[in-house]
Length: 558
Image: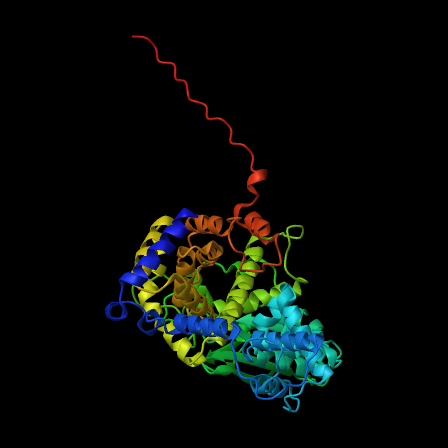
């Protein structure tokens, strides 16, 4: 706690001692961000709100219609909810003016209703219910926010569907699937007896693999397990392959029986179906490097063929025997770098498995510590993204695209500290980050707001240098809860080398009972669950160490 206040005090002095021109002259500092564009915009917005909240003497030109206290309070609730979901209508003052009318019109258009600017009772109930659900939080809300294409606003659409009689529980979009894949599952379910929820959990229907070697999860849908004649003939059934590309998922359709990932050869978004008996190996141009198993595959998935596969186009019928006789020698210095692992795809798989298991694991139901860590890591990522998006909505005069661009420019300056995370103890890393912070010339509040925004951008863009760097800044600035993120990154190997030994100190920092809870604050038992998963047992349960016994050696007298 003393270190936190010392750093903040030093930052305050630094902000006064470093003129803006000097701060801009710093090389290796964060370009536009260090100038305080994002943090300053938020600070200015907060000052403007404070000024608007102060009583001002205005000349009354015309009497206004009286608004009851009940109506004004209801208006405030509507304005607060609109702001929460990104339709910025300004300070919730209970007066529905032109700005509030514009926000209401945007909200109505988002729902597919007429943008009249006047809320119907049905539209108001949707908005307020979604807002209350978002504030209450919980695993289901976090799952919806993380998996829905609209993010936090997706919660509004879910509530709309529920109130319209279209239960989203029947949609595959609630199972962490990409939008294109979820739509295909819903389409298949519409013409077969099993529901989308039943299909997602049916073995063999969804198969996960990295088919084109880009490090992202691809999806195979095999309709032969639906039991529907609509999708199958006497010779074959429809198979849909969704391959990840930078532009999104590309669908390839085939006719086959009992497919496996090994049967497909994919280059970017184009796939071909080969013989089922052809063995699978790694392409000769990419020497095989043994990869540590993903924690998600330590648990039995509900779909059998869930192992990433790549194909050697030149493989013959005897390749399997050749590999068995002469195993490939790892080459760590050439042949191209492997594709960086995607945290977004990892969380897609974790969410799919969580839903197949019936929800998040608890202390009472925990059977696999790695699955608990996976679930809580992805849950923390979801909360970090939602928190940053709320701040982005407050930034005035800067577009979301400009904010993303500035945060991405953050990466080179933070990359040395991210690299140090994998090789240096916690205190040394934080000491280096503290020195960096003092050179920025920004106030503690500006740096904190900027780091929270860039943490969300880093996770949303799947850029681990930005995400981990921002989390390091927040932790060094005294937000101890973010120390948990470094522990997860070191355990899972996203943006860092897997170092369980170094991860323990970061987890312990994140478990500090005096910290401000930022991840799932409505679940006070979360720290205990994580502590059990990380350390195997709570400190109170630890057995006392047996006293050491000195050896006694009998030495004959000469």
